[in-house]
Image (tube, rainbow, N blue to C red):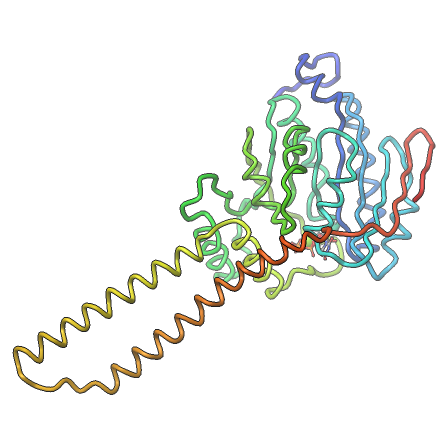
Length: 340
Ligand code: UDP
Ligand code: MG
């Protein structure tokens, strides 16, 4: 990392990178309570980045169908140093769709994704930007430094999820990586090119490749309110991620099938052996019932897994837009405004 404190000390490559600007994408869903405070911090950040790199910033707030006054507050935020776009979706489409909407509307080269609840500290952004401009990284992602404050069950689930999704994958999705990340202009362009509707950002941002670097950080506690991601939603997101990213569950199904078949074959052999050597009839009722129930249960699970993939094919096939924009406003730091 370079320690230069103003634009004149930058290398030519760094200057070229910085000249493309930075769009900060913030998805907001019922974040009225903390939005103004966050905006203040972003303005301060934009000022620092301007002095340090000559970087011109914009922020894109994506209102994901909030039912409180988030939209009104977002629209009233001043364009001081940074340009402000407010994209309001026609309903609540979920965070992944909101991120996509932000990416589509971003007008600057590099794109930074950041939560609107204060957990992703603007103070860390300077470090992320330094990795991009000074060191030439394309994807700078953050990961939770420690998970000590989480329950053992949750950690176990997380570990299992990544083990499964990365099983046999060429490009591993880094464990613990969050949505707080910076993409260089070419990485952002690559992400825009991916055509799928089922978006799993963490996976996609890793899949595109380029030079990636991990930054550890400790997420701040939520500034207000509670998380919208309860256990149910997290499980949903995990299934979404798994099925859109890997065929590991299908392989797991085949493997289990093979294991069961081999087991059954060996069991059959042992029965033949027993009858042959002892001449006794083997009592069969309990083993029969257990065998039947095992096969039945396993088959239903496997049909469910295959069904998940068929559902995914169906939704890709329908090719529906990922989100609809109801309103879009724009304020420029030089005073111009636009509305649509
Ligand atoms: N969010 C969103 N749409 C949703 C749910 C959440 O845009 O349907 C936004 C939310 O406003 C916040 C970010 O996504 O800026 C992360 O949400 P949250 O804090 O609830 O999740 P967590 O931090 O617990 O993962
Ligand atoms: Mg949060």
